Length: 75
Image: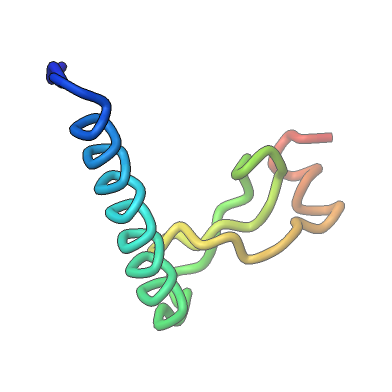
């Protein structure tokens, strides 16, 4: 772990990390929006809920149906 000599260094580093996260999140969203989800989806936990998740881009495709929940052992 890096040592920071002053709070300005610490603040610069955290600001850069936040910017990187924001940029990467936007890039991920752009990729997921272009995905056709042609390879189907898996029903699994994502972001504290059970939903359909694309097998290619890992995008949340919405809630799973009751039948999908049953067949995947969630209920």
